[in-house]
Image 1 (cartoon, rainbow, N blue to C red):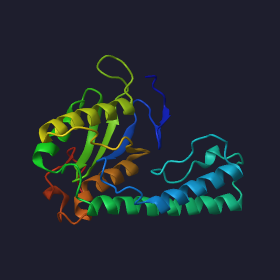
Image 2 (image 1 turned 60 degrees about the vertical axis):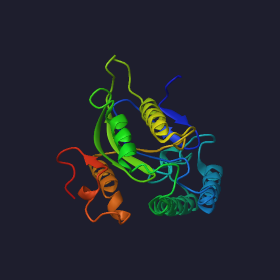
Image 3 (image 1 turned 120 degrees about the vertical axis):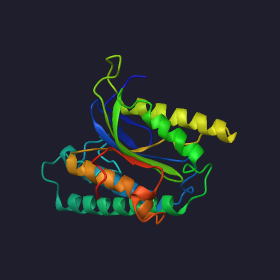
Length: 242
């Protein structure tokens, strides 16, 4: 498969060798079908209206994990007040979508498997660590009942001198963990949702916030009082002082 800096399934994905990322991936049945329908419909409506009024047709400028649609892709250097209003509404709706999404993940502990069980979390940890030092460097990860958060930086090239791409890493980790967990549980079929939420780390502050969010996920879900008490969290030495 030809590797590109931009690719798309349902969500847009941006990748570049040497880049740092905050990635979340979840079990296939972690979110009930149509649970977030009103948000997705509203976001699609706003996206369509903004494109109609001022963006390059066909350009992918929206990512639910970005702070805002990219204004640099607007046709006009200075967005009109109408477009600015729509962008703010889009941002507000996006925040509500992500909050509702995270809330659903926190309360819905039923699923195909429980990822936090030792036999499953050990498999995920091993697959995350498989490329450590060879193709990436992990900053932190957290394995919850139905999803995984991972903060890491890709190397520019792999052990064979070839560029390292995010889609290859995620394909490898999800495929290997799915195969092993299914085999252990005596199950078959897809384990993970095809899409992952990936955010490009912009700077040190963004990385700090991503690590803090990752490690404090069990605390926010009221599973533990201190992130260090959650057995399936890990961070590189020196990055877990919050």
